[in-house]
Length: 297
Image 1 (spheres, one colour):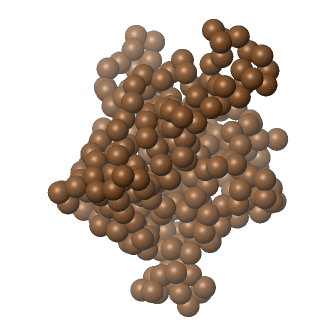
Image 2 (cartoon, one colour):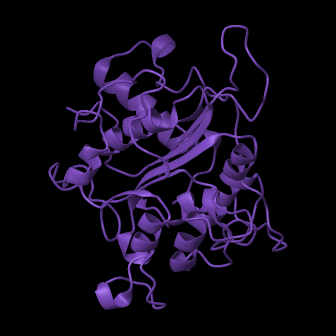
């Protein structure tokens, strides 16, 4: 994954920032939504604009993408030790504001731990969530929720995401793939320590879903809402763990709608789950290639 600029955030959707200023009409601190499309940078944005201009004859003055009105700047995600940035270094730059070596998550290039924006949000009382069609332990979501010297230590990332590190539980909602890193090897998982983190999560009070049927059951009426619901009607009990594939979820073109939720369903569901009781929230949604952002049916 190579994300060279903040255009890669489809955008930090209306870059509200970690501020505690209160508006006159809304007393709570502003919520933050970060959308990170995989491999999307300034070049890809330019190519997309040119595609629309060439194929649909859109006047150059009006040839804008959805995020252009919200784009406020750029972020240098370059690796500290390589000309080609990987997901770990890029994710750490997004999450921590620090450049680091490829393969490292949550540490700067001097191997000093760097706090993440998600941890900062949690310290301010925000509800927090991560949604992805990759493994939830993959480098980008891991960069917001863990600190490891090697991105391949996904079993360690899983433990941290469930709250076993110095700061304690930091993430209220974890939805994506990567079930194998929560499952012992004896049960066809990837954990050599034989811990069953799914069972441990249930025992700690996590609301767990492992397939589309269980995901749909999160909804008040058994269906994902097509739009936001009212405050006080939380869509899923928190904390919530959703692991819908052993590894990455299928590409949208290959996805079985009866087996796996779509990115749109997870994103809308996460918004409904986090936005309740008038509390602010921080949500990162990682958009993988061929994933659709259209509304669910």
